[in-house]
Length: 488
Image 1 (cartoon, one colour):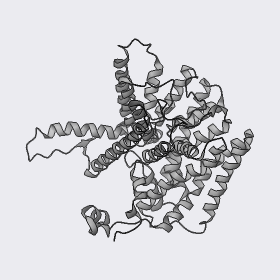
Image 2 (cartoon, rainbow, N blue to C red):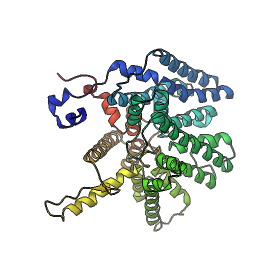
Image 3 (cartoon, rainbow, N blue to C red):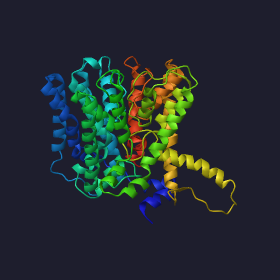
């Protein structure tokens, strides 16, 4: 019997003796070995700021680079443990998604933001959320917009999976770090070679989409920033009105980039390998097309009876919502069925294995299958064996348990944050909209999230972005005492 099976069958104090603990020293070494990740995050915008002459911003960003370099040098002569535990990998990933926003605080403060606002902005960037509490971003140097979008691009894939696997020695440690940073479904295992393929696809798509965006948005800097945010389904834009002041063609190009990022990256890997049948069988493209058809059809049904002008911008915003990019072409609806349709889109999210957030389309499909399956089993004989199937194969119990746990944690966190909004007197539906937008790492807002929020709400939303990006489990593992200590 394996250790994992023993843990699964154990209970109470008996199973506690079998649970692997996170070792402080190992976690510190692992984080130190991944300090170059922070260099990747902060060095390019630091160089851009220096070239632009934004010396305060450049200085603080270079300070973060130096700190990261010193952290890496501290364990330069020590090898990463070959027996790295999965719990330690999960804790490392969770801490990296805190370390990067913390290191970004001085840089955002140099732009005039308060410390808590700077932490919010950094967390929104690295979790690819796109919500902002900046009071006057239009007055920022352009390198500040490069910083936010580059942080989103790194947080979209490079930091969580590919760079992690590229910076450590090949073998078990890299695979465990990859497992901790990306969904197990619809992906290839994170060995060095396969991580390079994922990162190569991500980088290649970014270059191609940037070149296409330059054709419709003549400013190359803006085209680059928008593409970095779009492919990572982040949503930060160099203009405070998001996409509203761009042409319809420019808006459409950015939303197309969001769609590309919201489809499983494994789909593109298969296409590059000329494994077209595998790409189709993956189901990623079909899931996204079905979601778009549902949202567009529902939007038409809801809008046609109304005496309002039906423009394409509404549907671009809906697509932005389901991809969890968070770009907007105008104000969000403050009530009514259209607002609820946006909420549904944000909860569904992108596909598993993509840069998108939310519950993920594949998981939503499994949930819908459970409803249909429960109706089927009610009509079967008592001794009939009819497991829930996906792609013709039975869905493992562990998958269903994990999915149910994710949904429960999502709902409980949403209720907690929403209740806090209501306690502060915010209107119910707009507060619900912004809560789900935060938890699904979308970035769309009805205006509730702003610089005027109370400090406790800003802190709660910062935590919600962190939880949503890491899908709860890694964060809970980090904070639970049993991760570190045995029960007495």
